Image (cartoon, rainbow, N blue to C red; front, side, top):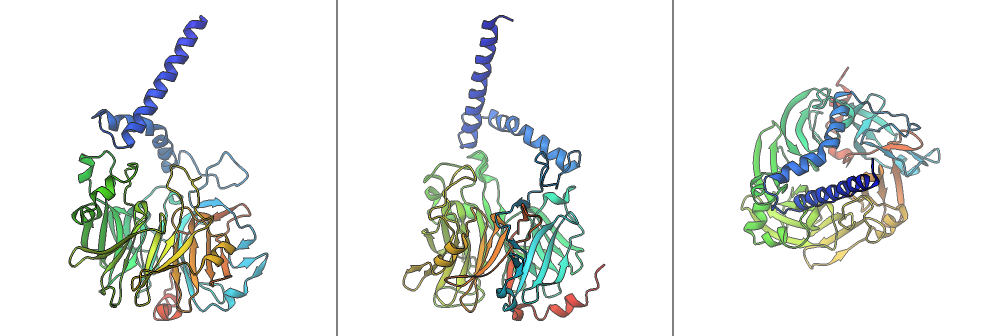
Length: 442
């Protein structure tokens, strides 16, 4: 073949590649000049990934758990281990003293590679014993290693409420049998509300997709323990009604995921600064936390920063909220920058507007830095419980030191990533323990 023909083919190939890349970027950035061709462009670009996912889902391609086979593919919950010295309760081979002195419990959702299943475990910390394990018997995916059991709520009857991430909401009984399911796109937090209900974010309606390609709304959703959806509110509509449409669509590069509602935290008591039943809402992509009253559909208070791309705001005391700040720069890769080199926990006082970061010293000492996910709880004695999700570690910290750290280690080079665990006090679960002890599940 003549050299000029080869050169022409190469140049045409480069021109097609550049044009097609421009078209994909054009569409996913929200522009609509390509009209009906937009979805076609994205579908073609996604085809190799869809084929790969289909092969894994059907089992025609298998997941290789052998860490020495770099041609294999690990389950998404099995990640590189940044903490090889920590193996569950042991550090450098020795059980940490902090566990022996801790009267609490850890409710841990985690993938168990030995049985190839997502599970939840209730662990008593002072003696490091597994009080109970839940292995769901109904998993809505042909490949059990491809789903994540998210943020379980322990119920009074010993069952759990949780969701498969960005998938259906479930209730199982104490032995893992399905009680009910709601097939929809639920994700991130499950938080206990009033009157035997819980609140969970959900990917929302598609009304804005008529205006903006691939726009992802978010719904605030309340569900009863019997599986009935009691309340739904579009966050896009809520913010637009309160005058924040430009905040949503005109303040930064359009990504399609402009809101990313990742936590709905109900107030379980009233103070001078909120009422029982109010909700704290976390909008990650807006670096914003809002106080919302669903009974009047009003945003009472909203604040952007100093936290950045935060998770898990909590009511704290009589006038404060605490926020887990991931503090990662928004970007298109997992190599995005951490602002101060670590995550932080912010305490904002609605009484006077002051903001403190009382756990900075301990978070720096422990090198806590999860770029996504992550949660916290300030305990009654002032200690801090933290899940560093993306690095597979759970910690208890004082304001200046590490009390204990835990990893679901699967090998020297890998660890199972927790999918939003809970620290529970003995008082919170004492009434459930006899039910778990007598469950006799096979």
